[in-house]
Image 1 (cartoon, rainbow, N blue to C red):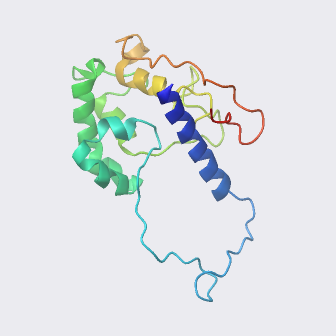
Image 2 (image 1 turned 180 degrees about the vertical axis):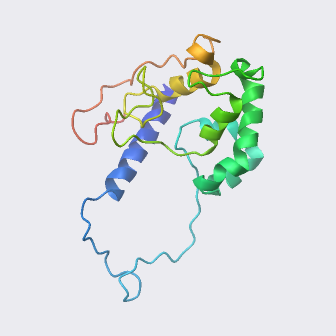
Image 3 (image 1 turned 120 degrees about the vertical axis):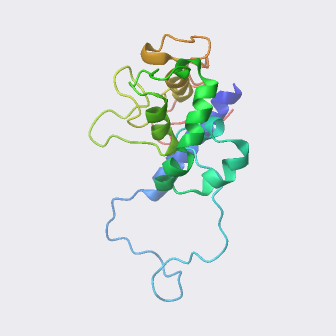
Length: 191
């Protein structure tokens, strides 16, 4: 139940951020907040708190003493700075990557897979299916009903055909505890 709450909360945050930051109005002019030059005022102190393009990935693969550095590193630099840490932690954590040459269902060995994971962004297909995994498409976006944590567990522990380590490859949360709405904001009301 707690994992589901976290998943629902994260999805709501992502949807909220997208709905407030997406616009088809190319002629939008921001309000005059920057001292007369029509530029927004970004003065003040801001701090990046957490990056979660792929939920739980940062939590599992970034060592606790490196969390703050990871969360403030821009995604284009994350792979160079953290891929080795991700690979070391993956190989120590997953029996599916215990031997050199072991691969996951994406056909990636530990180095290739952690290269993908170390850049903490949510990939999105603009011309195909948007899903975390639907049996064919993998990491092409994310739909509300996608079982993100189970997919991540399968890619980490499931081996080449998702059959390895079955007790580690499923969070056993198969659905939201409430049905999703059919209109915006789509998420079920909180308990």
